[in-house]
Length: 258
Image (cartoon, rainbow, N blue to C red; front, side, top):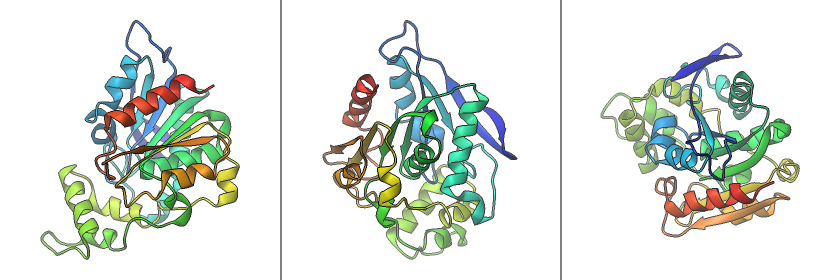
């Protein structure tokens, strides 16, 4: 991986060129932003997103969000607002000399991507929100207790099954549990209906039909002037990421966007 200084925070990233000969993507850049407690490899490489997108002709840039993967770990919750993480993503594009890119995020990454489209509209060609629907507005989804479960000594019972699953996932990805606890305490900013209506970027909202974390994809898309929704039958929050229908829906959307 490479890294760069994002306003004093070291951010790790990969930059993978489109495969030759170029296909539909024509070498256009797409930025991928992973979800909470994950990293670029787990979210995008292992699920074959990087492979499929580069084979379709896209240049793929994927970062490890601050506090995650190989990026710098910070331990104050105030360092993890969605605005700050959107700033990391924008500064990465500028660092690479990319004036405009398609931006795809999953779960927390979708929240970051939405803030990016709101605050930096000229730099977001299209917006792909995966694993996040109406809860971007309602602020619901994940239960309390995740931070406490991450900080607890090994073997301590978690307050609920979701918190337990995040602790297990964080351990499996060899994450810094203290940094993740700080992140989850301050990274779930919502957007108002007025803010969503101001995002005119072409948008695809993709949510698994069994996802209880994201909220309704169609309900979120209705609040945005240039958005449509794709439901993934039989998929929940963890299984929707690498779903074949998800990949095909994204490729079709990218081929049709301006």
